[in-house]
Length: 134
Image (cartoon, rainbow, N blue to C red; front, top):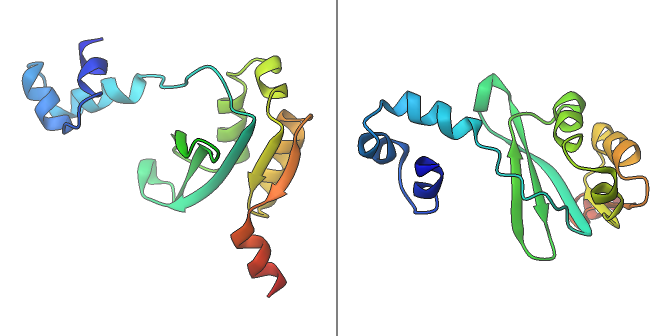
């Protein structure tokens, strides 16, 4: 819990490790085990991938609330399996609260929206829509 509180400050893993008398890899493992999920999904949910290098994956996945301009979570992969595990943590009523699911045109994102957010309208983000039209 102490490490969780220290993460609220803008600090490096190394400084947290030193303060807690542990190695940086141990601190990193503890931080990776923390579930930062807020427990409530917004009415507008946006999802996209970005190129990274976490866990040997080429792409990571970012989940945001575009209305509040807040990052909700970053997942280590953009696969349907990874996304399914993530969204299975939320109750059916929380998922039904999502009115709009915004993503690019990548098929696995559309599949996730169809499977987990049945009450939402799927919207292609503006960047990818314009790019496709052009």
